[in-house]
Image 1 (spheres, one colour):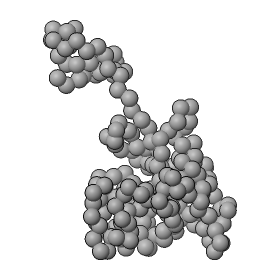
Image 2 (tube, rainbow, N blue to C red; image 1 turned 180 degrees about the vertical axis):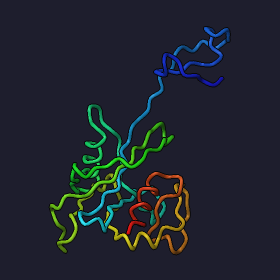
Image 3 (spheres, helix red, strand yellow; image 1 turned 90 degrees about the vertical axis):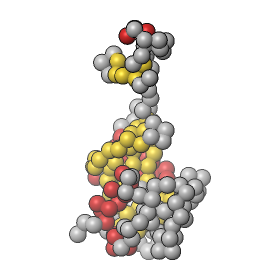
Image 4 (cartoon, rainbow, N blue to C red; image 1 turned 120 degrees about the horizontal axis):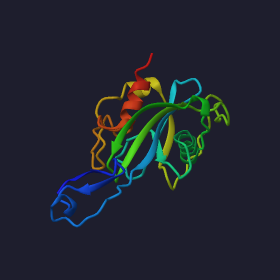
Length: 192
């Protein structure tokens, strides 16, 4: 039987419970929701976005960085920490802005989307962009992508792990239209 909100929404209960004259013996259920910060990090000039890819993803898929909130941490702190852990890039805390959120059932998450700018520190060899130093245990690749490059490649893509990219997507594509990551990337890429 389906569950219903119980105890002023702090728990769920079987709609066929004994307390309602049914046969279900289940007491209150306290479902867990894991909060995750998902962020589009731009270069200080905002013409580049920091995108990464995991080994398990289809060839060419790049996406925003993301990570789960730790106990006692704010979502802003999570955004800053996860960006640094996954890319070595420092985020200007004052630039972190909430953009949108999305329930994500893998396994029981709420994705909270942000946009922020990287600090102008640790410049790369060419001197234009903050240096990337990613953890190869977590990410296969992390790079800065120019807005024009991304904007020209917004067609296609998928969120499915078994997705087979076509010849044009094999080098670069973003997640599918159902994802918050795509929304964050598209919004930035289409800005003038």
